[in-house]
Image (tube, rainbow, N blue to C red; front, side, top):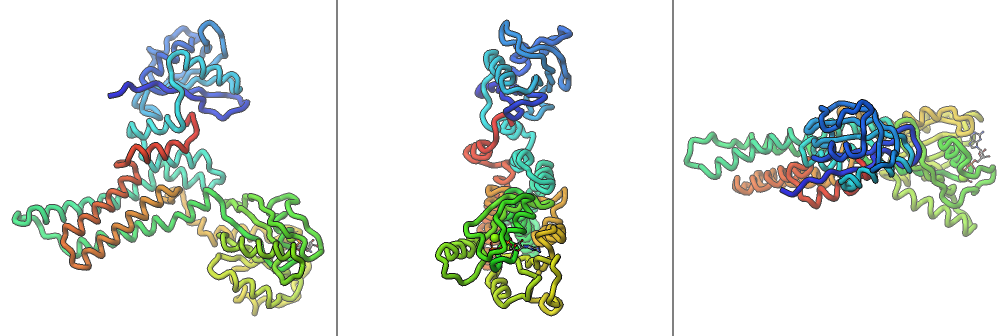
Length: 456
Ligand SMILES: Nc1nc2c(ncn2[C@@H]2O[C@H](COP(=O)(O)OP(=O)(O)OP(=O)(O)O)[C@@H](O)[C@H]2O)c(=O)[nH]1
Ligand SMILES: [Mg+2]
């Protein structure tokens, strides 16, 4: 077995802060730390049990660097499963770098990206989806995304995958026994069992796959276009949502030409907002370009806010625009409610679909828009224990597993041998084991952890 190195890295963000942490992990963590840290009480680190903290000073050779508290964890009861020492000194970029350098002088090796979490994975402290969730937790930008990441961290996705795998393994072993020892007294595998297990697994896998969009939205935000005829108040709405004058607003129709974008947090959800040119027939070549851009943007959006001017009579052009949206989720916004609504909307409402009445100028009704978006994107259904797919790797594994489960079912229904069915069942199991990292190549492991920051 190769010698396991003792790694060190700064675990806190760069810049100034109250506390900066240099973390050491590996078999020599206590010995390395002991060379740079001398406790106030004279106690040696190497004699201390885990879960202890000692106050003292950090030295690089004879040079005093800082005062610090050393927190000690003994293997296997630590994040990585190895001995860990965390030197908590004052948080300044010079100081933390200097303390790190002292640790490297004392024999530690600089940690690679995600190496602490990678060691935790390799030492069985967490599976691959839980390790990925650590990164999602760190980068979570909203309460909802943090909640989903935490639920994955606690193993929600692993548990789901294990349930499905366990049923499939039982089926696979029955199939294999039946194929391999037909003359023995082995209970017959019933069609009911094969059909039942495979259909259930397929349904569970499809259900998991359907969470991908939610996970993506929570993590990356929703690509949202604000569209409508000129002068209906698109840019005013953009500014109301952004909380500052992001877009130019004038009473002249055709003000916005280029697309203006901003990232806006609206309640639980992050919107990547695009304010676009008012869509109309025009001879102005610049405005024509703007209209073209607006139409192109629509095709790549996950949500459209179609703005209408409620202070005027709704025009056929408005309704035509709505029809043009096709499959894209749309919320119709009847704007300028502060000016009064001359038209009776009762009859029109069914043609407008999901509608919110608001005044982008006064802000009245914006809160309702927030609720409408949350409900349209099904974000309310994400609870603390939901298993939501949070990245492409997870989706690929589950999607391949779902494909193989379907093939297994087709093979069974098509009257193929149990052997053939079992090959597909095994393929399904393999994909689920790759998802959790129980059976995974070094390449995949490397790929996952290379996306981490150093120090995590
Ligand atoms: N009273 C009232 N006026 C509004 C409201 N929203 C927008 N306006 C006014 O409507 C006019 C047009 O607003 P913009 O936000 O520039 O409209 P737009 O849809 O971006 O227009 P184009 O960029 O030309 O397509 C401006 O004079 C705004 O002040 C509203 O809620 N109430
Ligand atoms: Mg505008």
